[in-house]
Length: 348
Image 1 (cartoon, rainbow, N blue to C red):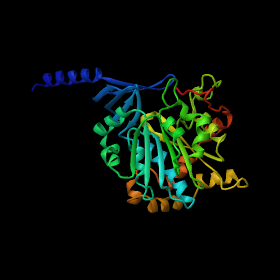
Image 2: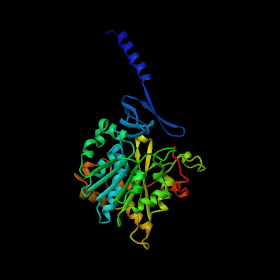
Image 3: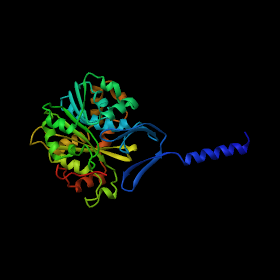
Image 4: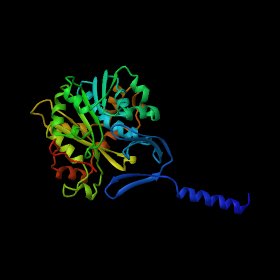
């Protein structure tokens, strides 16, 4: 091939690169991720939402209604952060978790992490959208797939997690909410209310029961739209923290960086003190900042296969997750909103 033809071929490739399909994901007001859309594996509509699996910079990615839910690059970071601190907190009280409830969790990766725990005998997952589960089993088997569904300890229920929890008489050692963000008209909004948290507390085994929920964006340097006039505020991290604080003795917020979500992501766990006389702040701090060896020992005791099975979480990472920045702590301190059935708070 002549040099001229080689140059022509290069120019064509350059033009193709410029006209590549683009996936756009709105992260916050005025902030949008744009990346090459490498491949569309599937795109369909369920009764509740549009469900897609695509390939982008972050690898295979689950998208619902245009928003990233889980990506190949970092899904382990999200799911390990959501699951293990709460189950290890339960185990640290001398009552290793035997029964776990998951609200949502359609990718099956939350259940995957729960079922790594040797002590778990029963894991109930209630998700409203069976289509998401079917799509993830087919296109994202690495997230859990048939290995989770076929586990004798696992029970899958297609239904409304709020309704199921309000009606069940069963109690659990750990309750995990891996649900959609509290967006207006979203299916999960009632699972973030004070009324629901009050009921969830009655469904926890005591002593030692733990509640944990994903809590939306938790940027280490909160942007202006998360520090505004409380009308335009787009963050729900503070309201979730406050609402749980209105119900539980001890509430511990933490965060992990999830690149595919556009920054740091928040989680909030809550549990009861042993007695009314206990120093609640001391109890919280003891769990936030244990010696790393305490967590590493729990991992070896509780996780089938030990530390080698986890990609993110260990004793050092635990300290990082619970050491919120000064700016973020100030944001939580200054936010006084509580989410109720009649006064919900919506995330961007």
